[in-house]
Length: 276
Image (cartoon, rainbow, N blue to C red; front, side):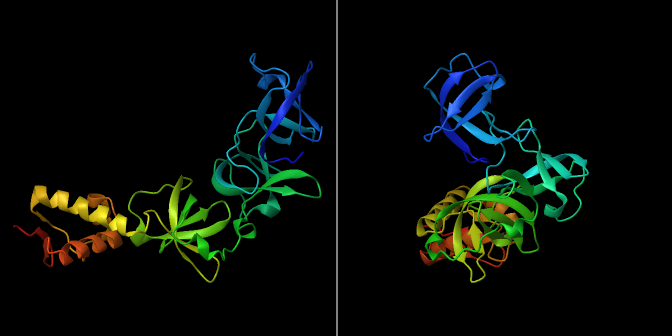
């Protein structure tokens, strides 16, 4: 049985300590009594997470950890001792981050970006803050334009770093951020470029002609009400995001489309609707 992931097992028998679950190969593992409910019965399938208890035995739990094997999450340090730092990862037994897997000495109460990994030699799970060791370079050009899962990481002068599909490193540039992003937040985005260094450029909005059509329609709805708006292609990106809910890049594409269709007039400081 492989530890570190949620898996579906079958209840084989009930005993005093709990229920024994089996996999397709007949291997069994204990699900302790505290995780049992009155509705469970023999031969029933159940989803459980497998890890090792304090006595180094593989055990099952119905609790859901904050991350699974080779995934990433921001976790809080709840204890520090001679072995390293321990973080709360959603299970009763805290996850160890050995000193050799820390970027800098972790402090009690601090939140850190952690990945869950498996030591093949000891068959134990451990956490690591040395994220670069476990990030893969991406060379899959087929990801261009595709929706991906994101974990929001730290800010940089260029924008916001993200972990993409729990495998790759990416960045959302400041000009493409159209809403507040919180570190540790999980959301979806779209790959706009696969770079030669294996990193990804990410946008929060889908890149397609339909996106700009929707943005142009939104602008026209506002102009039908106001007739004129105090914005231009020189307006501050943050002001555009706050008022229109779109990035400056999308805003410029939308006003360009409307201007080409002769629906608006542009000045240095405003947009006006063209009256019929």
